[in-house]
Image (tube, rainbow, N blue to C red; front, side, top):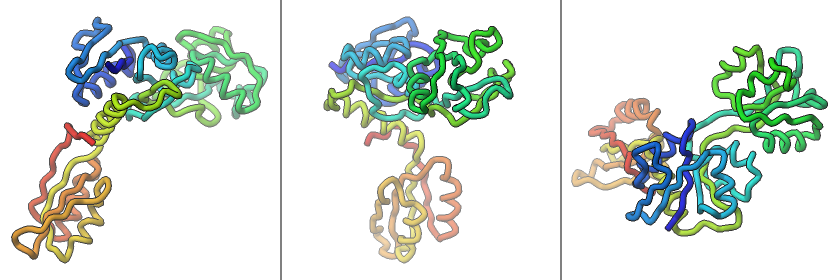
Length: 281
């Protein structure tokens, strides 16, 4: 039975559960459930603290899990990223009071407060910068006001909280993070993990694409296919009326209206858009 760790709370939890549900798995219905067994898919889900998931996966206690890329890298565990999942996006940045630092090099010799000491220490070491890293479990934005640090390093989504504390980001981003599927390094991808990966890929594809079916004059098929190239290539079928062909392609959801307008201008007809929320690749 495949053992999968899932965030039990926080910004990644609800989206993780919803993606697994869309992938065809049985998920928890009550936030108090810590273990859910899906016997139909031979899977067992363990709802754990997001920060602990990489540790459990790296130790082999569970086979794989969903967590943030920032938490994975900060953990230092023997776990690796299998694939990004397209939600929970954020950037990890340095911030300080205006005039304190303009570049990352100016952090040298200063105190840096963060909830991600492993990640920050690796980044500073990679830049050849020596600084004191102060570990905090939360409320990092107030560290400078309270005199604990000169600089902070934290996840930045909108930047509103930083501005409220009179801080501004500086230097290049340390990391662009999002939710990721992870497994233990060196364990190889088992058939069960491969099935999970394919299902999650299908959900991501379905969220970004729709299926477009249309009829087009045979002599315009090549032009039509250039408008709807699809993920790999469109499917073209001959109709009973040999002057026309039927085309089916997956197109980006956000471009659907513009693509339909182009097809109508080209001379296509009978255009049908189908949601592919149950996509399986």
